[in-house]
Length: 222
Image (cartoon, rainbow, N blue to C red; front, side, top):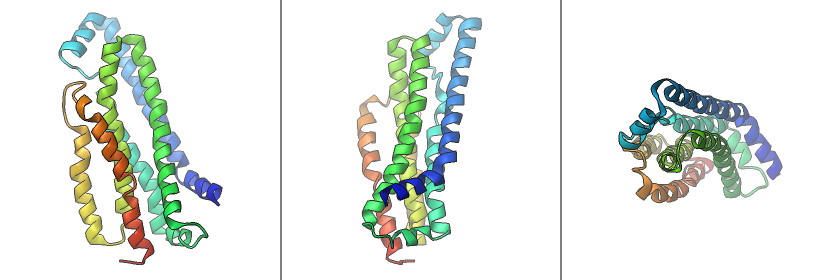
C-alpha cells in the first residue's frame, strides 16, 4: 500500500521535479559562466574586491528560484487531490489517515531536499573552483535561508490548497505572504548566520501544518 502511495505522488510531481532541478542547474551554470567572464575580462582581483569588501552577491540570480520550486511542487502534488477529489478516496483506504498525509508531506519534502541538494552540491563544487573558503562559506550561509524558504513555501501552499474553509484559506494566505519574506530579507552576505538555525527549526515545525487543513477536509467541513 505504501509503495502505491509513493508511486502516486511520484507520478504527480516527477516532470516538474526533473524540470525544476534542470532549471536550477542551468541558472547555477550561468552564474559561473558570468564569474568566469568577469575573471577573464575584468581581472580576478576586482571581482574578489567586490565580493569581500562591497559584499557583491555573485549568486543573487537564484535567490527566489527555490521559492518558486517549492510553490510549484506543492501545487503539482495537492491541487489534483482537491480538483478531482482524489484525497477523499485516499481517506477511505485501509491506511491511517494521518500516516498517509505524513507520507505525502514526507515525499514532497524529500523531493525538494533532493532537488536542492543536487543543485547546492553543484554550486559549492563550482564555487570552490573560483573562490577561497571564506567566500564560499559566506555564500552558503546566505543561500541556506533561500532554500529553507522554498521548503516553508511548499508546506504553507499545501496548507492553503487543502484548506476547505475559505475564511481559513484567506487567513493562511495572508499569514504566508507576511511570513515567507522573512527568508528573503535584504542583507549583506552572511548576515543570516545568527538566525539560520532558528529558521530551520521554524521550517521543520510548519512542515506538518497540512494536517490541520486535511483534518477539516476529511471531516467534510466547507
